[in-house]
Length: 202
Image (cartoon, rainbow, N blue to C red):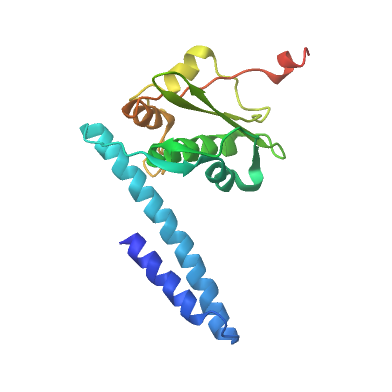
């Protein structure tokens, strides 16, 4: 229903486009805002539905040709950069890809140092039998964010892991659920923490 409502809102905007009356222009701005909220609601409904199917073991993966680079650039926006790659489109499960990108970006934005950019790199590893899409996201955390150990990183992405202080009203999907989705399509995610001071020799 969110998708249908969004389509109707787009039709209203199309009908009112070009009418230069202050009240109409204000109404169009409000409808644009309404479309944004509907898109967010539709996004969360789709991902919640995905999580339910994963828990029940009824999720059926569907691969389509997706412009991964453009999608990543749209999601990261001005918060980061997507490195140049030798391809743009490939066949993937867009639902799982979107879930992984969205949750990873949410975490990066939450903990990153202000003013720093989120870096996204991608490449395809091709063999005789299968081709695998690799996506890497790198960000610099704030100084007050503790450095996770290897064991803690593994625990965070384990299926079934929940933060002890997770709010009942949290709308975050969680990396553990992303891992479950990745496993359902034959993939995996991982988390790695490292000190920039060590890499700089300081």
